[in-house]
Image (cartoon, rainbow, N blue to C red; front, side, top):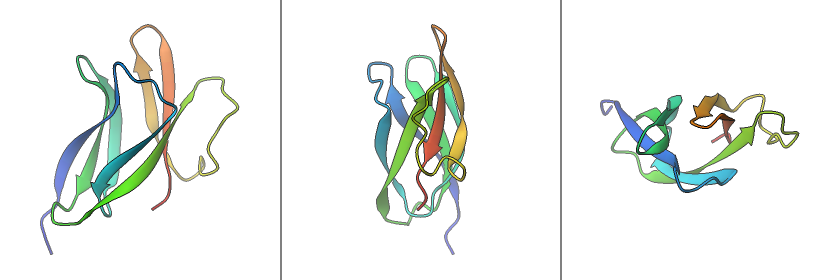
Length: 96
């Protein structure tokens, strides 16, 4: 069994404000946290097995007060991110 590592992924740059985004991550990646990083944007950290192949994972950003929750909202909540300027996003990931 390969050793695990923590990788950082940029999920939303400062210039992009999409409500959904697809990331390539190692199969079986387990997201640990999400935060705003000045100069980068929204990033997340995940425990990965570096030897696993990459696969697409779908993420959804839902602004506070929005009725547009993804269907997997009960099982896929990652965390809440406060963006400079007062915007608050709640991040969800689709099941593997």
